[in-house]
Length: 173
Image (tube, rainbow, N blue to C red; front, side):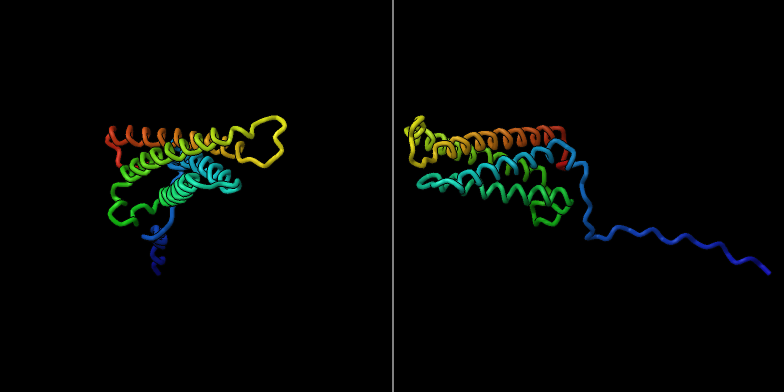
């Protein structure tokens, strides 16, 4: 009697086409860290504004901060999960999309920060030691600082993306 033929090892399970993989290189890389910092500073910006009594042009600053916080959150998770290819037309140019997003965010955060600086200056009358009425001066000052931080983070992120693009890279991470 002949021995049975050797068993074939089971075929390797291939990753499904729609499988989600965590992009650890992006998470640990400079752009992943910058995106997390942008999310934290952006959340601080809009939460600070939303918890104060605001009116007039501060609505624009709140709109800008919430809009770019949500867009940054979307970019972060699409890149982290490696699903940017699913975005029609833009998925093939993901690095360019990120740079354009960062430049637009920096421009609009610059305007929002200018608005918050102006509002801080217009409420500076209540920054007196014995002033008893409620005043949004400190909230507007904190929002102006957070806005400036967001502006710097988005500019740094755009600069990093431009440097990668000039080196011939097509991917974010």
